[in-house]
Image (cartoon, rainbow, N blue to C red; front, top):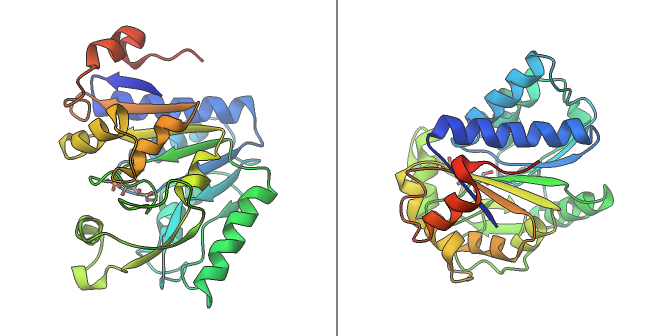
Length: 258
Ligand code: F6R
């Protein structure tokens, strides 16, 4: 795992967005795995900016989002379909037929989960997966104690995730309790993974993810098993790491070779 510590949130955001854009330029037909949440909003802003500056085109990429709330239709304002349209898809030349997000309103959510896992495999797998991390160490909606080899399935949100995500809803009672999410095994199949964590509220999860132990207690610690995972941090999110001198010696200012 490459631990890339940046001196500000802005620098970490710019670095991870540049990394993704570099990958699209190198392989215009690449398959990106995408995330939602507050942390990735500025990453998408930066990706949109590169498109507006005509530095990159997303017209040939294929995308798969990590997750969706069960029970929300794509046009629901709190759905992840809506989030992606607002923050990325609707602002670039990404073709909507090349984007996939699980359907939270599917009649049979378990069948939808199987369909989604198969669709990822059918298109040859994910080249680069973007991730955020929950305060409890979740990735996607894989909450603590999720199987480390899980595939796309229905997961119940942890109470702390319901609380954290209630900031987007009118009240906590409106937050769906179930999600369809890529599994940890699905995520680990991506050929490359880039994760971003910003701020003090993520520092404990960041410590557990990077310095272990490998445990279903912290789902993100599964990234220790991945041969090509990069973690983009601001100084605050990195503040609890005990081997920080080492990470900074290997990657001064969060620099990583292309
Ligand atoms: C959403 C997702 C989640 C978020 C995580 C962090 O698609 O995958 O795992 O990345 O909950 O969310 P923020 O960035 O809002 O703190």
